[in-house]
Image (cartoon, rainbow, N blue to C red; front, side):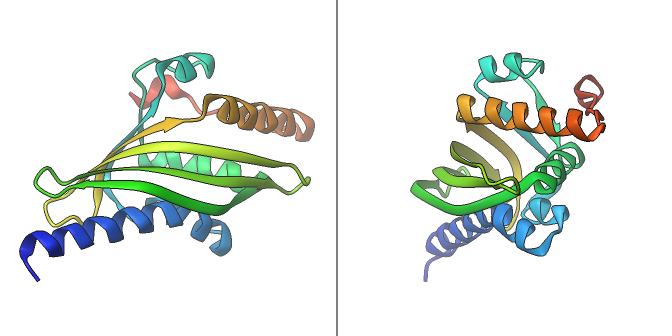
Length: 169
């Protein structure tokens, strides 16, 4: 196999593992799984800007691993992702980048199922074994519904703890 072909396969493996981490973390009941395929200094950017604004976030919000893991842990307390599928994986070996669409179902402990769709852009390390930047273009309607469910459940349980997004950069 050529070096180019090996890198392409490694990028595909890393991206697929990243997408699977949402279900794997649920199965393991371990929110740290969400960061297994990213570098310690990886940042995640949520788009579109209108979604960030609707969530009360800065329009160019970059989220570090610790904040993302906390939010994922909060999601796990309410349910988890199932039925993840990806399609249209596109890989640029030279630039160490990949793009993919994914979909899945957030199944809540109270029985509700919410279908989620995302488009992702990944920036990978030189050997393509880790991701150092994630751009996540989310289904705004579904994410806002998730936020509303989380807020309603937190209010009901008296746990109104919120993440200080202004402190994250």
